[in-house]
Image (cartoon, rainbow, N blue to C red; front, side, top):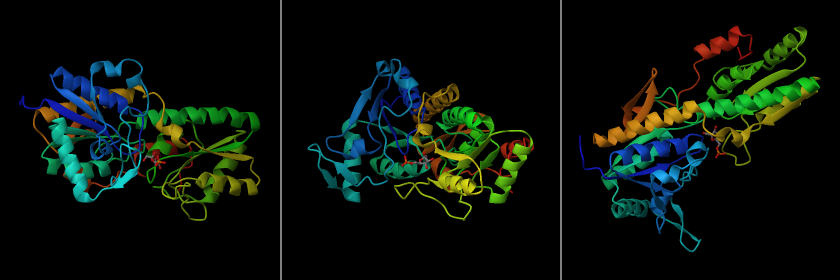
Length: 363
Ligand code: F6P
């Protein structure tokens, strides 16, 4: 056991989700219990790249109710993927070269006296930040988060369970109005190329149809299911669509930013409407990344945080904490980076469960 580490940094990176504040809290509490100091870096690495730097010493009182019980991240985050553009003190921006970014990271770390950095983020952020940490001569420990739950190497990431609950709650709400109007409701769920959120929430929210990117479907299969439930006496229908599926015409649809998926549910609604269905589509959007973290996320975040601080104490670097086979473990970042993002297993137990329940999940 080393007693050298006295000051560590923490930042959140990539899209936010619920449970990030719980993770920050966990790291701060576990580190302070060891007599260390924790510096929270604002807006991912931007807090280190900008001048003046943006950071805050985090103390126990920072987490007085309700902050760690809220969604979002008290440190801010960034998923723009371009650290070169930094805001200056006067509000204007500057365009930094790779060398300048490196220099700022290293001088920032030195000035703050940080000997290890905890990165709560996606694997992409961890890969980039680990290189800066290596050149700055400090250790980096990653904590995975994503509502998409496709983070490589871990069975579960922070944010997923809360998002499942948010979507389930939305499906319950859509169902009440669907029953009032005898309608087919389509809910479009986030997930990028992975259908974990749609599949779990669709089962929990009692959907009739769940379409995910990992499993091909036919429009005829969807209509057949709607006819079947009608014949069974059900007056409404609930279709859950993962944003990353292709429309019946075989195309992906994108949000107004042109980068992230969005809008496929409207295409579906239009087609069903033409075929005589009373249908409405709802894009659940960013509410899925919000809400107070559920207990599963708070516990996971706390377990991950404690593991991360333990790893720093042991002098480890470039490790990612993971949850595998029911246990919290850790893995080398390099190994994690060689693993692809984890899609839904079409032969997995949740797809089997959905099928046995009569949910149409594709062919
Ligand atoms: O990866 C998380 C996620 O919420 C995806 O499910 C979604 O497609 C994307 O981020 C949205 O990103 P943004 O916040 O940039 O709109």
